[in-house]
Image (cartoon, rainbow, N blue to C red):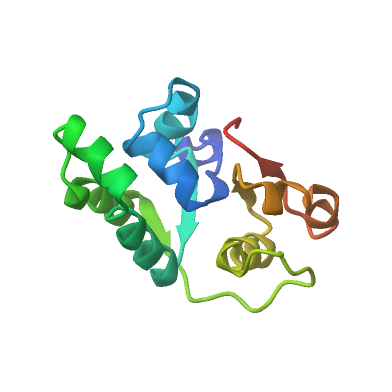
Length: 144
């Protein structure tokens, strides 16, 4: 057996902005396994330029900026994690199901296009679990 055959392919995942914040801003304990999976290459984190723009904008929100200051963590360091680990994809075509929160649609569209696991804690996304499963998308909050 070749070395490449013995290594399993990375799992494709789409991480919404709140999950990214949990990984690198809030350092949530339950995010540890997902962070390790991303950083080890076990996860192929799919994202778009629009997702990066959203993250950059959210990092300027007062409550997020305060947390960054408390941790002595510049916003640029969080964006460097995005740039290092996220694999940029073109914007995905509209998925068959629409989210009530238009800001979340880009995550759903990308997950559906790639049959990727979608990690979100957003109630407007979580209520779509069964519909997304029909499109081949496993919906997770933090779990792998």
